[in-house]
Length: 327
Image 1 (cartoon, rainbow, N blue to C red):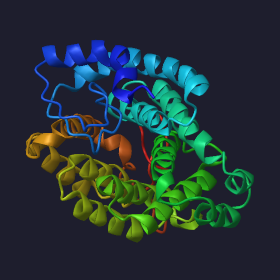
Image 2: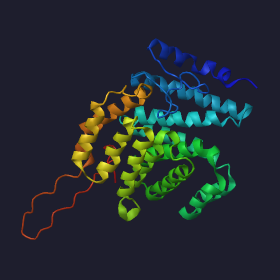
Image 3: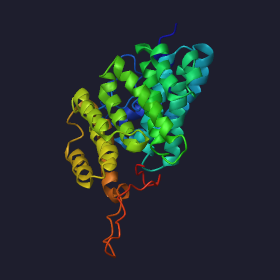
Image 4: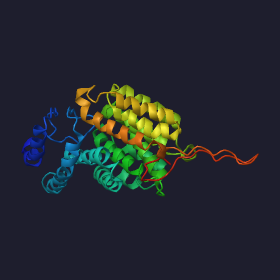
C-alpha cells in the first residue's frame, strides 16, 4: 500500500509552501499531512498567529480534499482518517474564517462537515434506523453501535451540527437537533472525558445553554461543562472562554460576565501556550467581534413603567441569525 504521506504530497504541497513562506513553525503529528492547519484546530499544534493566511488558503485546500474524497471512494473507501480530517477542516474553516463574516457560507460548510462524518455513522444499521426516530431510541443506538473507534466520526458530526444549529435557531427541528447533539457529546464523554482536549465539554456546555429551560436547556449543567472544559484543556484554549461568554453569559443575560470574560481573552497573549497560538489568535478575533456587537446579544433594558401597576417587559434575547444571538 502506498504510504499516506505520499498520497497527500501533491495536495498539500502548495499550502505547505505558503506556510513556510509565512514563517510557520507548525508541528504536525507524524500521521498528519503537512499543511492541514484547519483539520483539527483544537488539538493540532500550530504556532502561526496569522489566521488570515489560513483563511485565504482554506477554500482551495477544501476543494482539493473534496476531489480526493471521490478518488478515495474508488481506491480506498475505508480511509476514514481522511474523511475525519476533511470534516474537521470544514468545521475549522467555518468557525475561524466564516461564522462572523458570512454566516450563509459558514452554515454550508458546517453541513458539509456534519454530513460527511455522519455518513460514516449511518453505515451502522441500528443507528441509521434510529437516527430519525424518537430521542430515546436514538440514545440507545449510540452505545449499541459505537465505541472508541467511532469517536472521531461522533465528534465531527456533533461539532459541525452544533455550529450549524447555533446559526439556525428558528428552524422547527432546533430543539430536537440540540437534543441529538447533546446525546452524541454525552456519549463521547462516557468513553473518554478528555477527548479532543476537553472541547467536548465546551461544546456540551454550549448545547445545554442553547435551549430555554422549558425546552430542555440547563444553564447549571452548561456552567459545569465549561468548567470541565477548562480543566481538561489545562486552560490552554481561549476559545473555551469565548464560548462560555457567547453561550452561557448570554443565556444568563449577564452583560458583565460577557464583557469581563471576553476582555480576559483579549488580555491573554495568544502564544501563552505556543502550540495553541493559531486557535487562540482566532479566539481573540472572535472576542473582539463579540464585544463590538455586545448589545445585540442582550435584551434591551426594560422601559420605565408608564402607569401604576403596568408590568415591565421581561428581558429576552434577540433571535436574529445575522446578529448571532441565542434563542
